Amino acid sequence: MTIQPPKQTDPVTLHPTIFVILGITGDLASRKLLPALLELFSKKLLPQNFAIVGFSRRAFSREEFRELIREHLNIRPGQFREEDIKHFLDHMTYEQGLFNDPSAYERLSLRLQSIDDRWGQCSNKIFHLSVPPDLYEGILTHLANSKLTLPCDDMTGWTRVLIEKPFGNDINTARSLDKMLGKLFKEKQIFRIDHYLAKEALQNILAFRFANPMFEPIWNKQYIDKVHIKLYENDAVGDRGAFYDPIGALKDVGQNHLLAMLAIVAMNNPHNFSADQIRAERARILKSLRRISPRKVKQHVVRGQYAGYLSEKGVKPLSNTETYFRVRAEVTGARWNGVPFFLESGKALSESKAEIDIYFKKFKKSSTDFPNILTFRIQPDECIKIKFNVKTPGYGFDVEPKTLRFKYADVSSFYDAIPNDYERLLRDAFAGDQTLFASTEEIMASWRFITPIIENLASLPLKIYEKGTMEIE
Image (cartoon, rainbow, N blue to C red; front, top):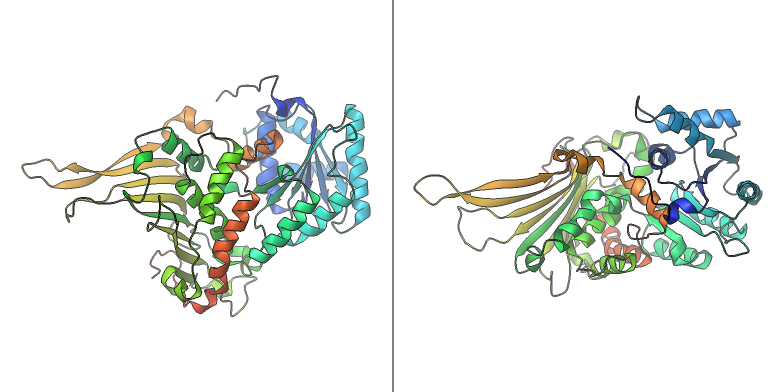
């Protein structure tokens, strides 16, 4: 694939930028951030002058740090030119410090100032919190108190903060985190990452709907019978038991990934595709979700736990945590009122996939025809497919279902051009485009819907299911 170099007027490449990773020795940095940054660097999509500054509690010499980063990149043979890898590592430096030590942030500030001095101008700053959520408040406060988040005296050089999900643990903790962020930063500085919003196949739903006029007129309760949003995993919890057990499936992926998919499927046409308009439309849908009252939780929610979960490392012996859920959600309003949206996710299931099925109503009340189903496969094997009815060859008039499919991988030029989710998110963070980042309104609306379910989850029977099955009733 040929990567077109950015235009010289590209604001991302023109202004010097420092990317600070707080918690650079952690799992997220090694699995997601660093590989995505290297990919962007190899495609010449980063600023001409940029630096990556790692911050963590462990002490390293310069060579030890470079070797650690090279190992964390997990580079496959032939994946990148050795020259690109070397130059990428040349852009990296490290500052050792404890997250709760104010003097460490003073040293970090001096480190960033030395880079600005070398470049001869104030640089943009991006701070990514690659740390557990319980460290957010302390780190953000120290960043603000040390004035690291302020622009330069001449008002050049912006500052942005990247925060990973989960955004709080319930509606109250989400409000507390949001209130603190509002005191320390402006909304345009805050980039809340739900990486599912950056999935190419999910974004393509908007193009499919609004660039093809044949579908939008039937995108409503008159024609659509139900929507099934699935995120299945065949992996068990494994060595993440201590992290997963206090959270459970509903908080882990329900409050964010699945509701993000629901919002994109159900949102109205934003008319212009600005970040403000798209995020406002997503938020409007999430605000319009009908709350599930305590007495209706049993009718709308199913929860399960795979057999053997209690034996996983880090899981409490009598844990009641769900590893599977199914929620029947409803969107109020003229377009969707009465159409059920089923949100389903679980671990240790028979397959791994994320997809959305749109079931259209059968207008001919006959047992011989089948519902039309429009499917968006988000991952893996990204595709769009439509199941429709055709006449069975012969003298009668029986019908049978057939499938029309567009598969991304079948068009190599199309498939090869797809950036992974973190490449897209980081590139947009450099550019200041918040379209694929969750807004305050979206976060609060999601928690308002999910929190009542979580508060009443213990009242539901916990269905035990075998690993590798989909039979959970």
